[in-house]
Image (cartoon, rainbow, N blue to C red; front, side):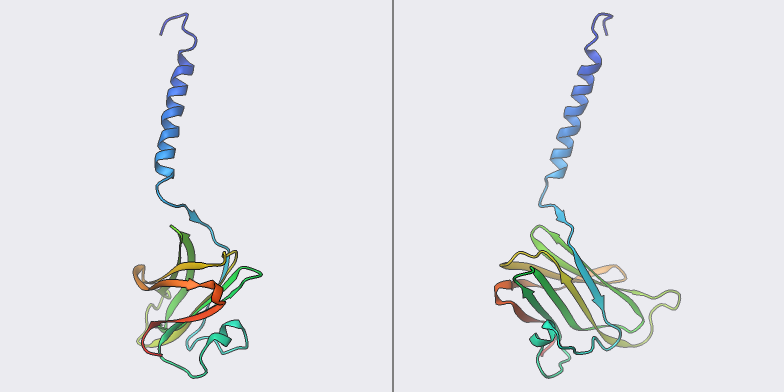
Length: 177
């Protein structure tokens, strides 16, 4: 660097800034972003939720079924989608949870079961219900995937489209209703 070249440090700074900016743009724009969703989740104990007089129950058939069934209702005014996946067969001693995300215009529900410490799994199966109330869902058709993770080994359980203009519906996830 010459003694009279006082602009050299700025030139280096500009080159580094341009390279860094291009790196961020190249990596940050690959596909649709993940949007944080506002939702409340509930997971039943063994045997499922008790049948209550709420919106989800109205969509449910009068007779009990061993089939795993997804029930949903949509409120056009509040843009709230309520989803309940009923009769999910899992180990009775699991610690169960649900997470929801929106990636690439697909709503993905992750139903997770892990052994409860310190005892781990037990030798029985129970039916559980997974439910969520999701806020700010635009009206129309949405794509939905359900993934189930047992000890972080994930597998697809159901995928399809919900037409929210119908305001409520059901889908058989597994088995015969």
